[in-house]
Image (tube, rainbow, N blue to C red; front, side, top):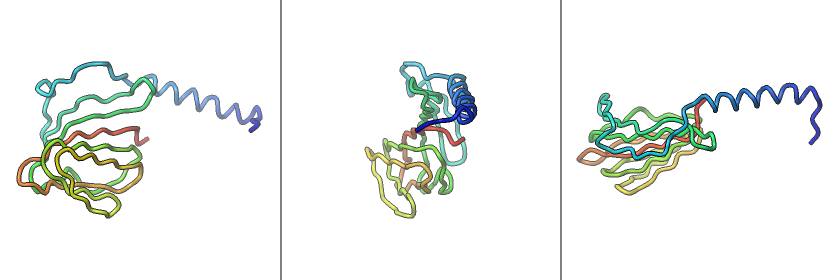
Length: 140
């Protein structure tokens, strides 16, 4: 494909701006994030431990947190967003809805939600559910 000088005049500053914004975000360091050292943020029926939030070496934004959800509760209403999510269920049972399809997930299960798909989950077990959420990408 051939680009004119006008095309490049528009494209190059946009690429430079995108690269600059990725460089200003905190890069995730190699480290051990010990469970007992992660501060707990309680809110409603959840307890959350933020593990890290930044960019990897490829410039992809990664947010990893651990959530404990009380029985019968949802962390929030069903929603959708631009970033992708991976949920790794450590203990408990979640009823997961993705685009109106409902599936029950038990400990050891992994949930992947693609960009833009409506999703949500509820703890349908008798005890707390604990799961990791890995968000890949940004919403803006």
